[in-house]
Image (cartoon, rainbow, N blue to C red; front, side, top):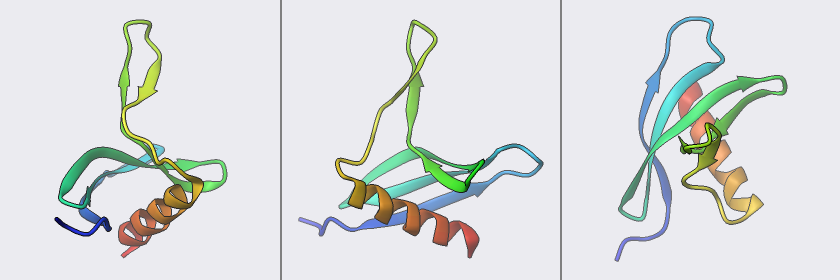
Length: 84
């Protein structure tokens, strides 16, 4: 079984002045998670998790970190890879 390390497997940067800067895929212990987003917010860049739109028109996360520590590690990893 593979070690549970998070790796960026693909970054698709977007052109233009949109707040959405890139789509990112990560791998976690052999599982690929697609659809993370790098977004420019009022406090700088942040990583948005994959989500889907419900029948009520609202957006719901499909994947999310279990702890703040994992969220922080994921943010640092993805944003560092984006800025390279």
